[in-house]
Length: 255
Length: 279
Image 1 (tube, each protein chain N blue to C red):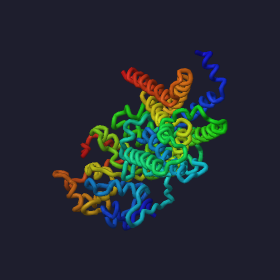
Image 2 (tube, rainbow over the protein chains, first blue to last red):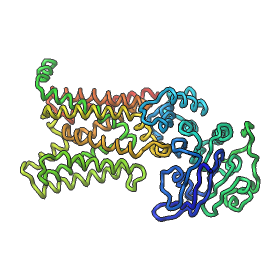
Image 3 (spheres, one colour):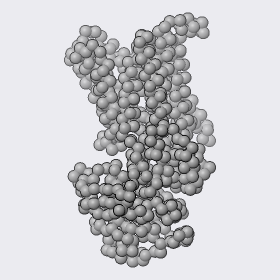
Image 4 (cartoon, helix red, strand yellow):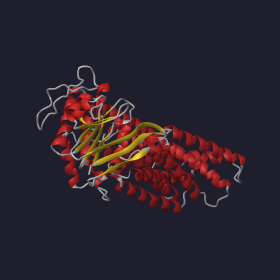
């Protein structure tokens, strides 16, 4: 059974339908990129998958025994967080919250997990730094480390590279790739960056206008891609970097 | 000066005022950090006006005890405001302002339409809003009630500290990863409403708003982690309340406004320290 299955999903608010009859499924180990124009309902779809918003109709079912506290989420930053007085450590460890049950305080296991994920995101030595004093890329890595504390099987990300410069963007994509390939975490990501989506994802979901769901190879050959692909990159399918091969050399577009 | 102070401390009402003032300052400052960060700085003012409106309704209905209705209505408004949160159609600050003004206006209107026995309408309203001397007329029972409630509030805060942080920093993340964010928001709303209704009766609505926002804002000037801000805010709030109370007793100034004045001074000092530290 699939990890996640969406059947006849319709999304929107107050009777205004944005997406109609959406069908797709995500299997364990997949790397799904959700692409589409602004306002096509990508974030609403993600919130529906997470159970934060109710769908107008249709259903989202989870399989493989996926529990809510095995999901990690990297949301877009909110206004409140920009000047929030909190240390990196405090934010990262708050990702462990869902596994705490009724215990009120963090134990050694949670502290160890937070430390491990801070190291993984290259944040070691910054545990006591204040979140609002960090650069955009560092803040994003803090939020990703927090998401990793929460995730066991599935990681959902809403534009993880928004507002990052090209170098940090490339690093971020590599990190996500490693999580997917090495740690076997299923990834669902919203992206504006079709080049990167075609490069890293195994599957693509295109919503708004023409709806498409399938493997990246099928997508690159399809019509739906045409509306988003720029001149020059149409039909050109970049090589998906295998294993540990560095993705550093190739350009990563940040739209 | 100290002789005068010791002389005053012989009176039970002075001791009661000190105990209750410190406890109210402690409880409100703990939840103040969360409220300020959630963009609900004005909720102290708003909810105390709601409580004022509710109290006038209770008075007109000639209820013997105004407390249950006041608490109920205030908790209801707090839940409506805080649970709706970021998804509400009317956003936090506007919703608080709207409720606050509406409750105040309707309460005053009702009092005018159905005059009660006391006859001193302006005086009643003034003492509700500014607290005037009510903190110096507390009974032993009221003091015990404040002590018990403060213990409950502080215990709840410590037990749910990490959850409160998670829900304050990022509600959607907490909800999405399996924390019952709605339940914790409800808890915060109820506790805040209880603190405000009690504190308003004891110290007046002017003081309670100040106690909610000033210590948290001052602490945020200097400290950069949630834990240090919370601790600093609690300590600062207690110290300011004590200083303000003692000054008010010795100098004979109004209690509420003196404490607020001390809080303002502390805020200015902390802003300065914050600026110097960042250099």
